[in-house]
Amino acid sequence: MDTHHRIDLFDALVLVETSDEAHRFMTDLCTPSEVRALAERWKVCQLLNDGFSYREIREETGASLTTIGRVARFLNDEPYNGYKSLLDKIKKEERYEKVIYTVNSFG
Image 1 (spheres, rainbow, N blue to C red):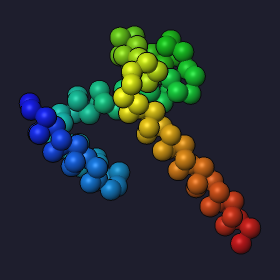
Image 2: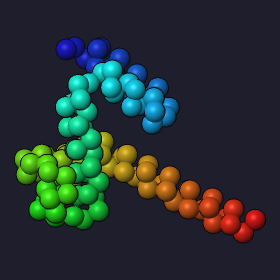
Image 3: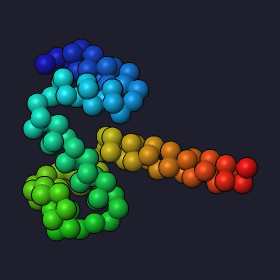
């Protein structure tokens, strides 16, 4: 696949606005096993980020040590920072929601 087609896919991904829309797009785009594999990697990423051990992650998710190691390498060693970028966005959003909840609880 050439770079142009990959960019088209990435451009489509950034247009997704809701979890429901993402679910529907991924269901159309991927096989059920591909979606499960992607979801597993994302869960492994979150657990690694939260400090869980490989053994704990394997018990929690059933992911292979190879998958856990690959996710860890991309989370910690590779220069792309895709995982870290989204984890940071989630953390900022959670902080924002916590502030809004706190402010509203005084109202």
